[in-house]
Length: 229
Image 1 (tube, rainbow, N blue to C red):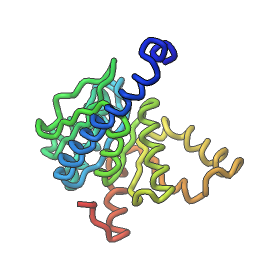
Image 2 (image 1 turned 135 degrees about the vertical axis):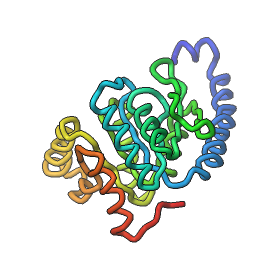
Image 3 (image 1 turned 180 degrees about the vertical axis):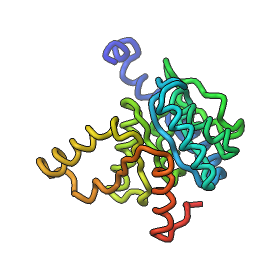
């Protein structure tokens, strides 16, 4: 960054930032226009690095199929790994399969299971995350890395602070999530009091696709809510 400032000058950088607002605005306009037509969906998150022989890839495919059986579409980040698995399950189940692709120097390429009219491309993570949150009726979070955790904690924060309405957040794979959940309960809640005990109730840890879909259905039945479309 310092080298870039020396080479281009501070004023040039500020000018480029100003012009970037038009690109950012175009991503929001494109996203809002196209996502508003998709109908109720559930987002599936997880690692781009997991291969088709991985049990969580297979579980993501299975849960996506059951999600579409229950009348929802599936949204993923559009890439390989768990994202591909989610789109694959939705595609094989004959449901809506949405991919919110992000331009990255590695890993990311769109997978072949996204509906041809529902593949959206983003340069900015923050614009893409707005689409996940605004147009999802629930999050199913599979094992993943920093990107997966980023998407998970952004959703929790928005619900906790009442910036958005509550929706189900489901963590699949207790062997993966139990360490994080133990830390949240023992450190954030009981030791440092940096969250409220009821905040933990925002998260559901499950191991099967049936449990995940049941939580989503029970949530909307319990609160007499309909998906927000």
